[in-house]
Each structure stands twice: as C-alpha cells, then as structure tokens.
Image (cartoon, rainbow, N blue to C red; front, side, top):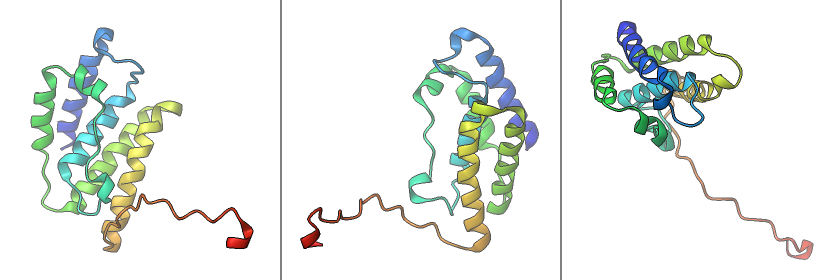
Length: 148
C-alpha cells in the first residue's frame, strides 16, 4: 500500500514542481495533506465526527490538479483494507511519515489531520460512538444582575 501512496506523492510533487501550476500560498506539505484528506474521505471512518465524515479539498488545489486527479483517485480507490483498524493505522502511519518531512508552519495542516485521525483512532479503540457536534451557542446570562 505504501508503494501506492508513494506513486501518488510522486505524481503530485512532479505536477507542482512547475510553479505555474502552483496556487497562491502553495506549500509542498499541502500535497501530503491533501493526499491524506483523499484517503480519509475514501476510508469513510465509522468513528469520524458527524462534522468530519469528509474533509473538503481546497478549490485552489483541485483547480490546479489537471488530468492527474483522475489517475490519483484511481490509485486512492484501489487502497482497500478488510478491517477499519488497518485503514486507521495506515493513514496514521502515512501522516506520521509526512510530518517527518516538514517543520514549522509547513506542519499546520498535517497536524490538524493527525489530530482528527487520533480522535478517530481513540473512538475506534474504545468502542465509543462519535458524538454529534452542537453548534448552538449557550444562552447568554442576562446583563442585569437583578434578573439572573
């Protein structure tokens, strides 16, 4: 499986070597991050939070991909595991290897992805179901102390 991800990374890094194909604010680590996101979406983890069932790929990245996108997606779809535990470990290993290549600000997106995957893994190991995320703001306390 690692050979497949190596092939994907080779395709994207070669593609983005050409500065004309790079989007604004491009970082080399974006490639590993977006490949991680593609794998995350493909594996469709049962213990992902409702708000994190899929991770959107940036329009700038997708718009810059050209014809290589279909080739990469075919490889991503060919990466299959019989057990969700194996796909979790695979993606965590992919992210860990990617994090070793970069430092400082380049790690921001990879660290975010690692954080989400750690949550998926923790919930999977504990058998815990993903909780719904409640975006409702708590009621504000009344500013008037006599009405509290």
